[in-house]
Length: 329
Image (cartoon, rainbow, N blue to C red; front, top):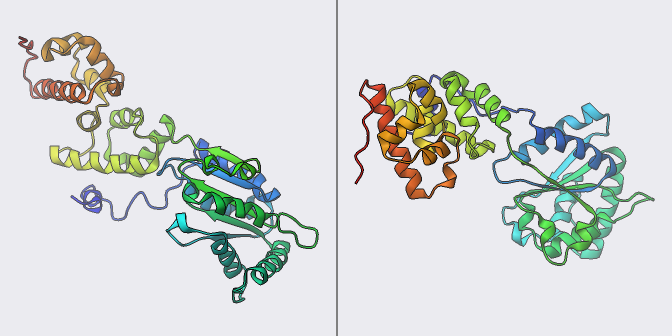
């Protein structure tokens, strides 16, 4: 089933994930630093895995910044090209001139530089200019070095004239030959969702479709630490629940798909680790790892075998069958 089809089956009339913003520890930390960065027109690099919400966080913070801090109006400039490896400083210059003025971009390098300095200087009197560079880890080192020089432009005693916010999945300052840029850049690493934040987000957007125990089990998983992965997991679990004929996602779906939730299932089935070990022929130590959400400590083959064996025992238990001791060779 498609994503929207699954959501529709659970009674949603619009995508519940759209437009949801939660104040995470990451967002709070980035907000404080960006406030100082824009006020001082600094260079900042924000590093996070894809799906951790760095772009959304920056957008939300910048939109609210002038209201909350009393700063001048904030004008955000972005590059629209997707081919970041080929971005040159000339592309950045053209984006700044185009977004900050109605002027035609001058063709020759020297005249364009003078044009840009004047436009930046005049604009900076009226507003805070913020250049946002997405996927900065893909930018060429020479572009980063030229960006540093661009920021050193002066107009009527003012310098720098704008703020730079770089967003990337890894630190662009690790590229060779950019030490001068690195020394002038503040780097922030986003850590992803905490267990409490993953639980709160799930409850807010699709909580009515999940049993409380399932939300608790899901929030403990290491794979539920960024928004993109968590959204994908939630929809996949809802589809699995439909396959089983469940009205809500239960811990069994969590266990069946991701190996989590065994703690909740054991409690619900009133079965001990020792009984599971006897019934599956799998060591108690191995089952204990799974119950404590440490399935990643097992090989893929062992994890799959353990999950399948436990799932079969729990299905029998749920259908009223007795837990039988496994016959081992």
